[in-house]
Length: 329
Image (cartoon, rainbow, N blue to C red):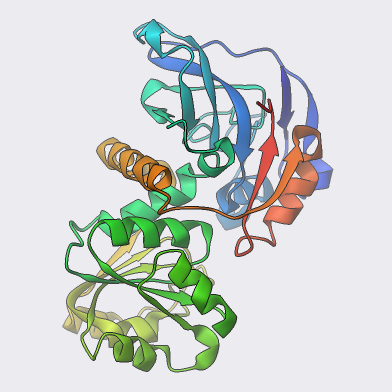
């Protein structure tokens, strides 16, 4: 099969290679997916670059955890009727060496989610890492029905999914964006209202939108930068569910957080409980099918141009997703 891989970490053009690898075969409880589109997420870039102290877990890595395609083979213990199903996959390269940047990938059957005919492959191909992270950020502490949820970075890959699932879950959703010209786009993506960081005093403007009522949860993209704002806007017993930070060792105001009994939940996509993954997969698929979640596609490139795709993905998260066409339909 045609595939891309790297044998060492480093810049995309220095380490990524494209060539022939043996076709994989599904094992017990696994399915093989003929990949049509492979998604690229910041986590894929980080593993390849060695960000966050990551190292090479395997001598050779076929990158990308997310993708979409068609099941063409199943392993022992999997219903053969699954062959021919159109699916999106997640965690393809989590604790596994071979992701979706290849003509075929093998994943546990439960990580291949049936994709409705109405949803284009490119929409589902980049859903797993950001979508499941978003779902966990919103729902890890229970239902959000009737609650106020702030989603920071509402136009990012995680942010768009968080806005969609929080609104579908019955929350009043306030999105934050970088600049005033992005506010309208955040509302179009599903937020009830949005504020831009460039306007200053985010806390005051968020509370103005809520009529002075404190918020229940924050799905947080910038844990370090937004701590002061979150302390002002969160109710007693509120939650900061964070999946990213600028500083890897931020200062944490222990007593202000403690006095308000605020829960800080740190999230990393590779290790969510399986029931949470499955619940997220179902809700995200429904959001795509209903049109409540939609990702702008910034670029589609062939597998042979994976290095350029990675470079584009490093700079285009707010403009849209970058995907690879592997086996175009």
